[in-house]
Image 1 (cartoon, rainbow, N blue to C red):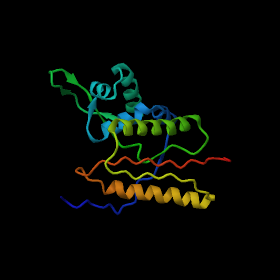
Image 2: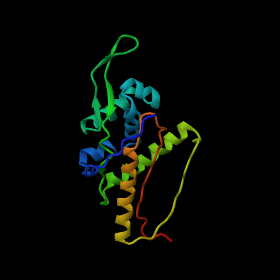
Image 3: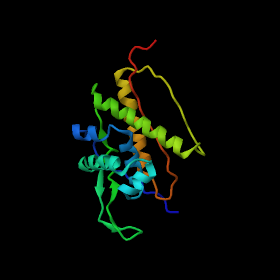
Image 4: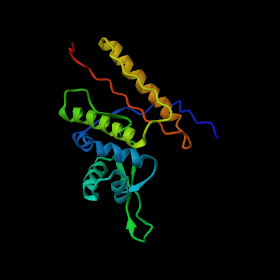
Amino acid sequence: MAEPTLSTAEPAPRRRATPQDLRALTHPLSWRILRLCLEKSQTNQQLAQRLGVAPATLLRRVRALTDAGFLIVEPPRQGEHGAWERPYRATGATWRLDLGTDANQLTGQIDLAIVDAHRAELVENGPPLNRHTRRAILHLDAEARAELDQRIDALLDEFENRSTPDGTPISVLWNAAEQGNTP
């Protein structure tokens, strides 16, 4: 097995999400589609079958993700029964996307959509062979919170750069949300 190549370049800057980006990402199905199309191009029919939804329902999500630049259409190909099909592949554009920190209703919907998609994948895949789960409530000032966010981003970027095609897929969900005044 070849050694992974570590990038010493600074990661690309985060791009602020547009309203179109936010609308495309507000449904858990969007995140499931992106996950499935990340490693292998998929057709609308393949995605609908895998996710157990009607192709027309799925196509609405696929179009929104394509229009926002999160999916690209690959050249048409002939399917197993000879019909021409259009495969889609995820661009990875959500990796460096800044969803914003304002109290935007769409941003809140996206947080829940990501959690719902992650939960659906956990249920679908059954108990993982190796899991590391941790939940904590931290009390941080603004400076410490900014440092935590920066360090988590840097750590995830580092390991994304070390990702190899023959490595084991690992699902990581990071969400640090201010809780307000809770008892």
